Image: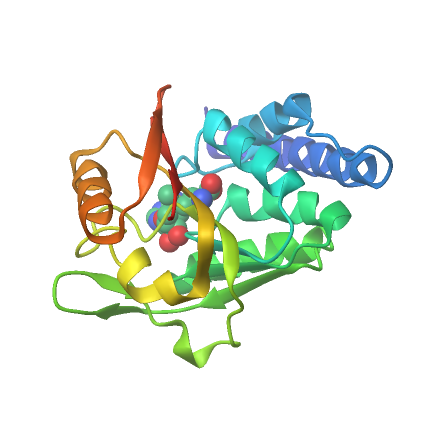
Length: 219
Ligand SMILES: C[S@@+](CC[C@H](N)C(=O)[O-])C[C@H]1O[C@@H](n2cnc3c(N)ncnc32)[C@H](O)[C@@H]1O
């Protein structure tokens, strides 16, 4: 496919994505249920291969729809928008941490484009600690306490991967907090799950699929 063909395909995907997004937002006003059909269309037309799988996003959407209270997200993208669509009916505020300035801009523009009012995306550089790095969110708005966390960042190649969530944010997470950890089939994430279990007493369930993920409960 030539450059013009590629450009046309991108435009077509953008239009299809926006249509599905509009349908989801307007359906949320009347029927607060999850729309797997619309989620499939969003996934198909979201132009980024780093996105979470449809299975992960569906589980996330189901929890977000029944959850009450602020949601923390680590690593932004399609998941940020889907959380935003759902919060149009639940009213839950969403705090998302993102370390990459250009990706932050892309997500911020998408949120504006869809008039999503409950999302706060915080650009937070990764800061090094002894054996991991984590988002330095201290320059951003004060964070509330969370009962639901979507952990899909920082990227697996970062120092210590996603281990920093519990040492850095444990005090901000309520007892019984649910954490969805993506990429749980990777060796690094398996080690993190083992460490969190030993050090923080978490319990978890691995959810199999094209890219397994873990549903974790904090004691
Ligand atoms: C796994 S991605 C997060 C995906 C997001 N939860 C979603 O469902 O779309 C984790 C991080 O990768 C980075 N990232 C996302 N897309 C990227 C791309 N196309 N190239 C490089 N980095 C990317 C961003 O910094 C993001 O926070």
